[in-house]
Figure (cartoon, rainbow, N blue to C red):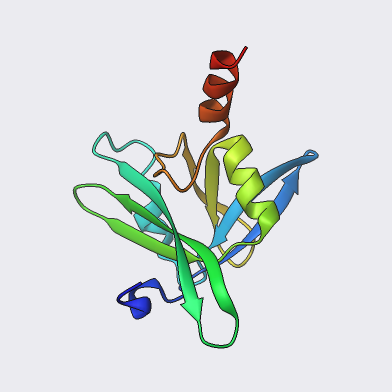
Length: 132
């Protein structure tokens, strides 16, 4: 990775359980909640999830992702190094919720566009249908 500073950790992640179901969450503790309110109804919303490996001098290779959410008027970028449970939850639920430090939901992103490094449940289901 030529510029590892570009992949510096910016947000924490965790998995919350709501009615027995895991929910992948990114914690935005420096939040301007009013910026999130407009996202759910904005037709210009674009979001992408890109996985990467980053080399740390002491810890070795770390798997992380960049989540970018953009509209014509706002831009959010999160760089996260999640645990395995978080990755599994994103793959199977195909959604990520952004929450504040009080664990209140600010925004939920559904049907995430991913790169080849991150695969989702619907891609896995398509693959299973192809296989005999």
